Image: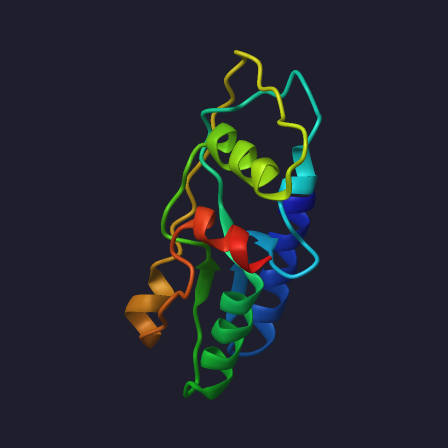
Length: 139
């Protein structure tokens, strides 16, 4: 339901004026360390699904890039280019903070991989954090 609402809002703005839409993946960064998100939880489904994350530093950098660009009218997904599994990522994130590891069950959920490359091709944007595991030491 929320996704439909957001798409409708994007359309309203696009109908009124030239618009650039920036959709960002799960946000991590200072005061948003992902090790706390699932630590100690159990019976978590979707361990093999890919994570779609972006670091706050890359988000700020992308917004600045768009503001400085001339007349950008596109929809950009902002997401790190690598997508480790949820299980591998959240276990590593918990270890990074010395917290209890999350326990994933065998129930698999279909996960999608968000492609955040269009902004790199259109505007020459370069992610500082292409690999979510590298983000952990910068949270």
